[in-house]
Length: 385
Image (cartoon, rainbow, N blue to C red; front, side, top):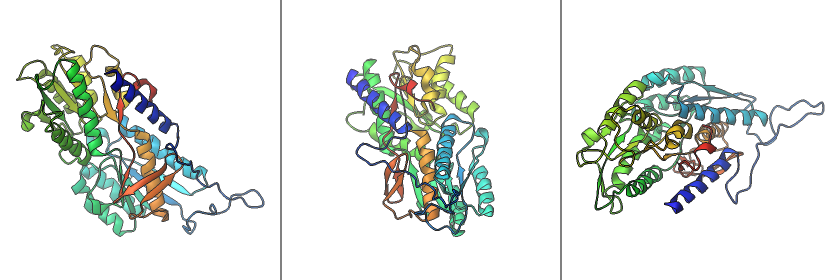
């Protein structure tokens, strides 16, 4: 256990370096070009190596799944960082950022905003898709108008976008969750000789990344290393509360009430969205009939700030979470959208470069942000998002 915690602490330190704008080890840091100056000190029309955009302002619209929620607020900070960096380098860019409120995070609300941006003639759109299939016709309509499409956090159908910014591989996130949950469970006396039942809290069945994590978790617990972690009944042990906070808390409370010792109880719960993971922690603390803290494990995908109070509370069984640098995700989405709009990269490119992150590989239209971050008591206070 000490070796595992030490490794996770090192991983956390590496991500802090990313937050500070460091490049990857061994890569040369690049800077956005500075604006050229005329003889009287005024800026010229564009930096010397900028693509010719005929003096046009590049408008980039960013559409999160929802507004007013910790994860997406951090994405917005990163998106605004990217726009500021481009402007400071002398590029003419305008950022539009809007999304449905948290209690109305539906595909139709996203489509309504997209239709408005299509009518405005924006140059690029970056969208975190609520429903991959349902939003794709509107994204294709935008493409027909010459608008470049970037998806981030959650993908659309592949032919409805130019690039997908994937925060971490689906397999990597699932492995981080299952591997660390298994270690916690073994410390509490479970294992091959004393198997456990698990439950999973997703969001909706149309959420591509969440369902991919769900699927990968289920595949991992079929393997020899983790087959003592059992999903007994997918119909009752996988929860889909949607994006409504009240319903999420209600279903998390129901799940907590089903947890404890015994073959008819749940011993490990995965909250695999930024809403469901903290809901498990809060509902455990609110429960009047808590299962013993040393008999269950709670974990999930959420921001460090959303999990901090639970991780640092010795009386709460939520001891770790998994995420990535959320601000860098928003940053990279806007940078990709800008570079597509100006022609610096295309859907067929194999690499893109940014000041903050250095070189990012592109593989079959997918840009991978990096490895997942495991959040523990050793590093949770190092982050502010």
